[in-house]
Length: 388
Ligand SMILES: [Mn+2]
Image (cartoon, rainbow, N blue to C red; front, side, top):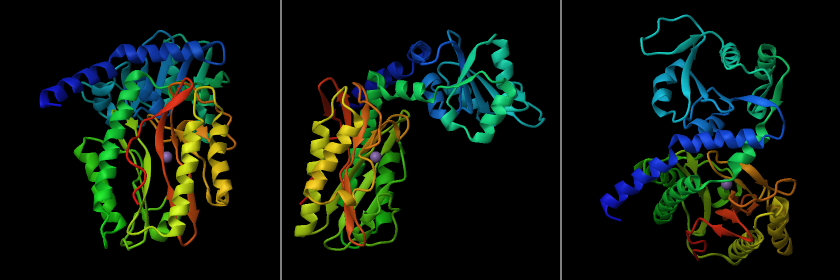
């Protein structure tokens, strides 16, 4: 792509991603799909939920009222940024104590829940109010009940399932996040030299994110040797040695959307035991991916992987779920584990990440992102999996 193609691509991307209509349609879609009848407004406290409906990523509360413009409530210090970045909705700042305000500020002095109550009254909301309750601490929820009365309904799941099905624009963003993650993975694999530390590799990975105008979607994991036995290892001063298993788990976030992928390298010659574990994990991942299609139970996909590991006598060493949805949040709906009640649906993006971890020895995890489709799935991550 020439530089101009790139510029044009970016412009088209931003235009399609951040037009008001995209967000307006999401709000409409939420109200038409709510599992409880008679909900007139929502009070969303999860900032990712806020972003999904307004385009602003740091709201304290996002109020949605059917067929009306959303209200984005932010701490006073975020007011200017929110005014600039909110695509759909009007912004009000809030400050808990009396202060002198600038002429351009629209800031409520007082308690956030009182402001929420005022806005709902102004909008004439009389019916039920949906709340993404799972994101509220118990004492905050109690305060909200005190302020608004007993007409609150939990809509956490409704919003989560709406967000779990990705639109074309969202898929574009996720694919961009994957492209950057794969560049970082390439960099990491090139950094693996004798004596390099986990921290040094992590720095190089994070640098690739920055150079691509992206963030990391979670703390980068680089684990050498025995440290690879911890699924969420923190990169430290451990130096790379001949024969180490190396787990690199990374993800970029761009335009709000995350990627997530893991590769396991073997530095030097793989031992017989290492390749046996590696091949079992790879086989488990393939079996799981092959079982993915719209309508499939997430628990069954997890089982497909677990059955392969069982055949190899390794189930006991797989100490986490098989995967999770990825989008605005690094972990979102659906959940892929033996206890999951979720059903995979066309348009969901999920990770498939079986792992085997042996104490004081190391571990193997291979993680890819997959788009659920009718009758099958598409693997979105393309980085090679086998390195020995
Ligand atoms: Mn993951």
